[in-house]
Structure formats: structure tokens, C-alpha cells
Length: 315
Image (cartoon, rainbow, N blue to C red):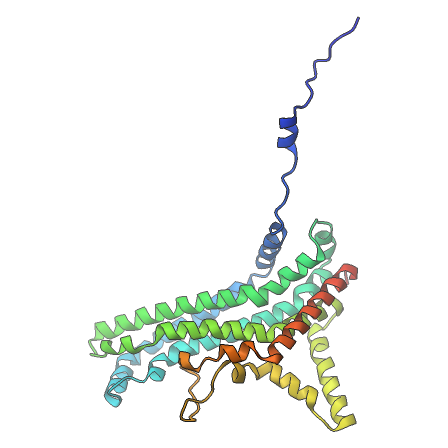
């Protein structure tokens, strides 16, 4: 006697619901960047800590604020933007420097750390390509850190302005009318421009550190520094020239002369504490051969780092 099976064939709709959803192309990159932020909390803790320390020092200095504001008001019929902008510029310069330092130390350990703690074996077992992994690590100094530094700096400057304006109003120093002269909007634009300039200019340096981080077994900092020094030394001894050394010097500080007009129309050097928008030179910077040459080198170093990670094993 034939018996009918009580099992019901899975319908097309059920199989469609049970099938894993296709992952969007950007999802692995998104989660890889989130992984970097989770594993390296100093990326955002260091700038926040420095901003808090600077704000604490600035709050202490507010004891002398009304007196200094009266001095500015009595010395100039029209307030000097430089005198008003100086503490805000110091905050921006300090946080930009911290951002660069965090980017350097992160890049030195980005690919080396996962080989040292052998977590590379786990991450390679996941469906995430070497390209996605390396690009997510490169995005930290080239994208995430500049955005964080900009947001933290602007927030710090807003708090500083509100606090010192409150102090001036409470003490009744009569200097509150000076604050409209503070070029806050211009300073914010210059900060954004400066972060973009330095990030693009330092891109090959960060990518070189990522490559060495994926290759060196230990002391990555020495392997980053020694080859350029050796090349410069050999060139100096063998050919009595310093072209490579000058190239390295230009890569470290050459962005300033290309991105900014360092002298006004009268030939007087501008003060770095306040750079007017008229002194920005984005056209000259974006047409600089050194900029695009550096970006090509950075792309080549990233490609080499991707290829290298494919074959590297734990230390």
C-alpha cells in the first residue's frame, strides 16, 4: 500500500526568504573601517583628550582675558584679527599636529599588529579581500582622522568662543564689541583647506608606512626611516648631490609654499596665526606636479601593500 508523504515541498517563496541576502559592495568596507575604529580607539581618544587639556588650560587663562581684551581695544582702533585669533589658531595647529602623529603611529602598526598577534589568520578566513582590508586601513589617516580633527577643532573653538564671551560680558570689561571682529568663519574654512592639503600631501608617507608595516617583522619605525636615510647618504657620498634629501624635505614641508601665498601684496610675510582667504592658493596646489606625483606613488605603494598582505603570514 502506497503512503503519501506528509512532507510539504519548500515553496519558492520560502527558499527565497531563507536565502542569504546579497551583501552590498560597500558593506565589507564599512565594517572594516568600523573594526579599525573599535580596535584602535586612540584614533579618536587622543584628539579628544588633547582638546580637553587645551580647553582646561584656556579656562585657566581666562583670568587675564578681560585685561588683554582691553589692551587690544586701546591699542587699535580696529582690532587686529591676529591678536583675537591666536588662541583659536593654537588649538587648530595643536590638533592638526596630533592628527598627523596619530596617523603616523597607526600606519606603523596597521598591518604589522595583525601579524604580530596572529589575528591575520582569523581575518583572512572571512570573505573580505586584501584590497578592502588595506583600503580600510589607509582610510584612517587619509579620511577618518582629518574629519575627526576638523569636527573636534570646530567644536573646541565654539566652546572657547562662548566661554570667553561670557567672561567678558560678566566682568563688564567693555570689550564685548571686539568679538564680531573675530574671523571665525574664515578660520573654519582655512582649517578645512589646511587639513585637505596636508592629507593629500602626506598620502605617500602614510602609504609607505603601511607597506613597511606589512613587510617588517619588527621595529617598523627603523625600517621606515633607514632606507630613505641610506639612499640620501649614498647619493651624497657617491655623487656629491642632495637631490633625494631635498625631495624628502619638500615632501615634509613643501605643501606650505604651494597651498598658500606666504606674503601679502606688499611683500610682507603673513602671520600663520591668521591666514586670510585671499592667501589661499588652491589652483597652484592642485596643479602642482609634486602633488600628483606623490599621489601616484601613494597608489603604487597601496597596490604593493595589497599584494604583500596576500602572501604575508603571522610573525
